[in-house]
Amino acid sequence: MSKKNLKDYFPVIRTREEVVNEIQTNPKLKSIYEEHPPEEWEEFIDFCTGVRGVKMLYDSFFKEVFNPEYAPERLGKLLSIILGQKVKILQVLPNDSTRISDESALLVTDIVVELEDRSIVNVEVQKIGYMFPGERAACYSADLLLRQYKRIRDEKKKLFTYTYIKPVYTIVLFETSPSEFKRFGKEYFHHVRHQSDTGMEIELLQEYYFICLDLFKEKLQNEGVTCDRDAWLAFLCEDDPDVVIDLITKYPEFKPLYEEVYRLCLNMEDVMGLFSEELRVLDRNTAQFMIDEMQKEVDKYKFLSQEQGEQIVQKDEQIARLKEKLKKYEEINEK
Image (cartoon, rainbow, N blue to C red; front, side, top):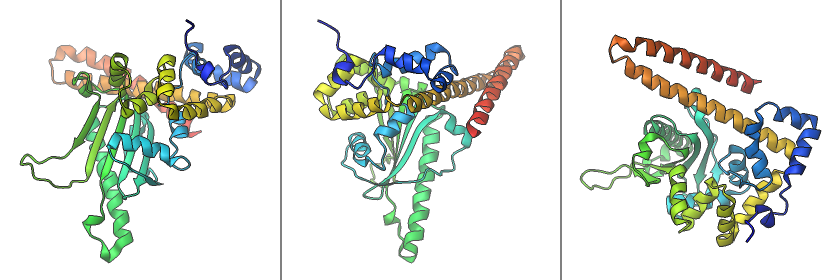
């Protein structure tokens, strides 16, 4: 029995020879290709030719499929599945929060929408989880809540009461989970909300959903897709062709979404530019993550004996080099 091939389901997918030939014969495409080591482009060629499925967590693909401006029903469906209630997107809100600019280094996708009931949802995709995920999520949620308060207070003026303020939901999708979440073993879906120790019910307006897709993939390998939520999470994170084919067989509504991305891949110049930027973001993310990890070690050493002095110096030098690397990335982005 021959192995399943995505091209059998999506005829628009091109062969490896066609893709490689277009890159080599087009000077602009070849120039983009040569910006990164050839091995980094293997993933790109694999999903363009159906050897692997497309990773929907890439910022460009995620925003193409879940664009809340021209396809709000898709993001609305995903949010309904995650929140456990039917929702409808009213509008996209500008993402002009007060978060520290350096914090964007590890953030891949960040979308803020207002729902029909005027509640707010922030959806984030992180390839590498931040340190202090709870603290930073709480700060950003508080910022969104304050923005809502100011906006509604200005709208209602003297008629304003706090009953107009609606919940703020923060949804964080981790491609690689922070260590705090890995301590919970197979648990990949965490819903966090304020709760009184007396059982008193009081609306504090802020809820959080932390979804560990790396841990979900382990569950998927053992149990497969068992519900609608599994299906949507598999669509987001799984690029194994067999899983993709099984998914579109059981849930045909996903097939047009894959088709849309594969048609996007036909515009080689655009999609190569997008993938090149993904590689730069991943490299920058990794550098920032290493800085955070090494800084944590340095801080720990400072409380120990003087014998660790040399290790501190070495870590400080590594951190300085990585920060210089990040500075160069920022200079490239500003051009």
